[in-house]
Image 1 (spheres, rainbow, N blue to C red):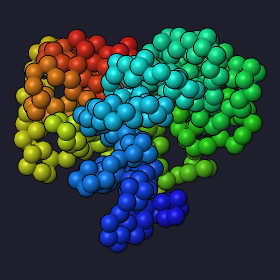
Image 2: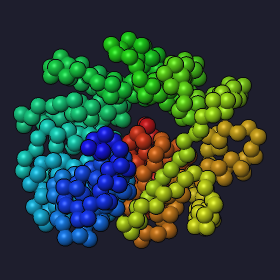
Image 3: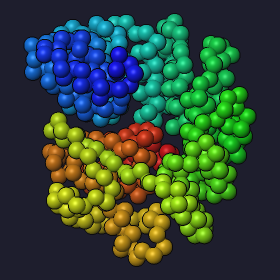
Image 4: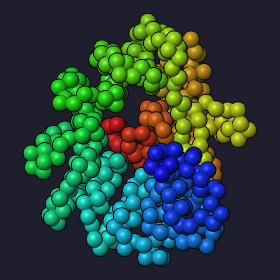
Length: 431
């Protein structure tokens, strides 16, 4: 009852009072944690369950796989996959579908494909999971090919299928195809677009630089636009350096919600790149007056079955200071092969160039990648998860790191996956 009411802490207090909790009790609390985006607690309870005489069920594993996906915990996900195969739980279509989702979100697309190909029965959810997997990794044409195969097999698509298709078109710059699928979902399949489908269309237009068209698209929607829709366009305005439309969009957002620090930061940074320092100062003052805080960048990397988190600029802990020194040396090596810190991304006019470089150097994704380099064997893939969009400078640095250390780096940010290998990124610098 408490978990259904989203009061997972109250549910945990009840659970802790049970002398000998059964598997149903464990499933209820683990699912509650997973649905509340508290994967660490869910996995902690799962380990406690493993130490008991109880046997996990398919319901348990669905929530545990979801938690692994949230954390990007691939090693644990691999162990669970072996457990699933050993105990015959892969007979459940939902379990295999959850495995596809987990592997995709942990950056192992090949493993997701293997699970899909080994499924004896594939329903709409399984096909859709594979389409979404290709989409988040930037393989737009493969997602479309998967959709064609889905139809050839007589499986009817649903709203998630089209969400994956539209996302795939957006990340791959397939504007005409995206419009075609958007129109098809209603005309042929009777699926009414949701706010997420509209968001994909705004993202599709925004990435392609069609900012005026995207603005009009939102204005003419048959439903009331949400802040997220406008934020999608604001991000596109920043990417394309369009201050004027960005200002109009921010006004729309503030009518709905003026408490999100990221909105202020995005437009402030856009104005700074355009040299509009009066606007920058005004936005920062507005942010201060409204007591709005910036969301700190946070990146995690899994090493030896343990997920390590890093925050941008944090050097207070001893291990962080040691990591900073290692990162200082790393950046010197990168510079020798052509890396140049993009200090235009540091929007403080009063900082010296060296101070700007230091600010960039200790971004959370660089800290996570450096930690992975230091604590994993040569040639091992480094997998990083970031809570925000990866910045241009970190994107550039990751390409150089993949080149000189002969490593594959898989970075999942809030929008998509980036696969860095041999000095190149799978996104083709289109993100």
